[in-house]
Length: 455
Image (cartoon, rainbow, N blue to C red; front, top):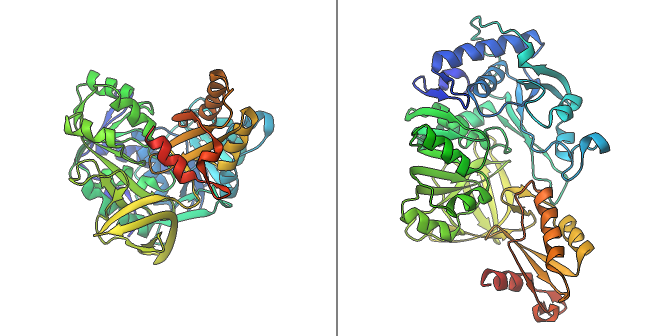
């Protein structure tokens, strides 16, 4: 059970953002070219690589060239410490640090990514494709086996030191076969190698689905700009994975329509969006619940469920075994036969799993952060309490000082925006009396959440 190009649906047509169009033969040629290049550069089974290429046919070819060689694809988010400048501080993100050494960094050219210098200085060998001449000779030799590591990423590291997570060919082979049943028609690709173990949730399953006809590689941008591209080209898209809640918020705040499209997201589905689905703005919204340790999804929520609730999830099948013990969620992962405690709190009723929030992990709009660091920044401005609502995917601010000026709140909000690259904002704030929210001697955070939800 090894992932190779032989699994790819041979009838898919690939549309790149530069208007180039490829069929399977074109993709096959690219895989051979990149595979021969990597061998020339000394690549072999077990070597690791960061693919610095945006969604494109070339990116797909690089993934399959690497996996057939038995190389490990490393998924890395922001490579330097968030809010700091790598060049001035020489500080890389600890998640990247524990993934080192990384053998190869491959990019179209040095201008492809703003992180070029970081990866160039941390990976052992950098390949700029524009500087290379490819040999497209047939190369169908497969060096990977069942136990070969296909993908490597890290755990969140929000509440503890991040850990390396690896997934093998055998596990991902079975998972993408299972997930491929979810996709058909025309699939839009925004980011394929940016979120932990998520390539097995959408990107790879789409490639092997017998029902998919087209891959549209779209620039990583906001959903409204994606709509502009689709309208200009008169493309009636069927699926798009939109990772961040804020992108969906911006889309549903308009009257733009994708009437035949199912939007897949890594965040929650807001109740206000469900009315938009009923009015035909999109066909459906699917919330994917998984972790880097499990990939997934092991639970989903859909806007079209008759008894929809923002925090109500269901299992899809028996691929994973999901159990709750003292409101802690445990997932048994097949192939590895490992049991993962997810740090998510749930209750269950009649096979519906109700999300009660995260035990320790704070993640808003799929961007993880350390609560103490955020609260420390708040304390620099004024007396206030940052309130995190993981159920609603929102950040609130309870201000205890009645003399705070609006411009000070805006400065704090700008800090959160800059730190999270636009994914975090103060969704609501209020001037409150501290003693009104005390439970004994402790501040009642749940009471604050209920207050802001009803504000």
